[in-house]
Length: 340
Image 1 (cartoon, helix red, strand yellow):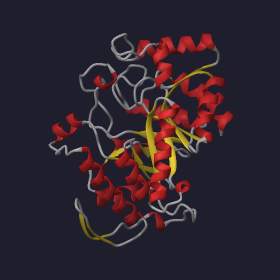
Image 2 (cartoon, rainbow, N blue to C red):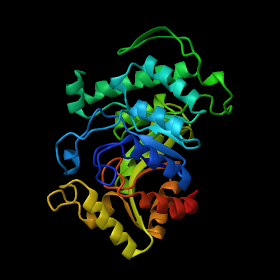
Image 3 (spheres, rainbow, N blue to C red):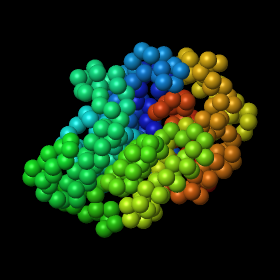
Image 4 (cartoon, rainbow, N blue to C red):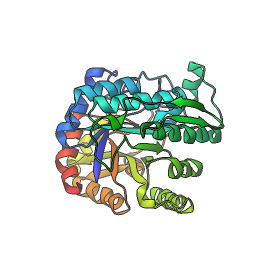
């Protein structure tokens, strides 16, 4: 099992401080040194925490693709991924060109996660039509097909319900430099949980990401649906690579865990941990993976036993939050070696 770290690239997401490039870069370098296999960035123009019980004022964010490009230059070993690129922000032929370029610059370290988008305020702010979920997901399916075919080196003409492509090429592409035969281009993942989205991943993508995991049983039910979706298409379910995103809090013992939890509450925006939102200590343990090292290893081991190949961890209570760099070091030194 591999582990990735969700990088804190929003206001308040790194120890409650405003977002900064130096903060994101330093955490990525720490993750690399601590044994993480990958680092991940989400794709929002801005975001708010009202969905999670927090304030509704917009949080500033670093732009996804620019940040991944900078990370490629700052790091040397970790894979760099998008979780997930909002399909409606960029034309898929452009995404394929950008992906091939970043993959080349990083030495083949790109993992391309794509999603249908969900946060209506940023669509409205940018003047992008916010279509229904079904339309956005079907458009995503066409986009993933376009991207994967272009990255495979095809000169592509494509006419679908949402995109028309005539004679598009990506040169130089991933095939222009040495790569392992079994991985001739960057893997393309689709992130989400719904039936249509999972069927789209089974049809068009290399992998499927489920974020953020609450109960293991909820994930197992969705994973069973993904297996069935593959079988209905005549696809070997083992070829759909699976990853999950998880909120994780780990301590060396109960006393250390209590200390880290207290720090997390202190550094999390008001409202996320409150009686009204229902996230107490026990509530947090139910919506994430929290406990001593042995408990967290046991919980993550269950995911490994059910075919999860990579876990992208948020060491906090909000997506891409990090309470303290100390949590990265502990996870890397104690949890990763037990499950690698």
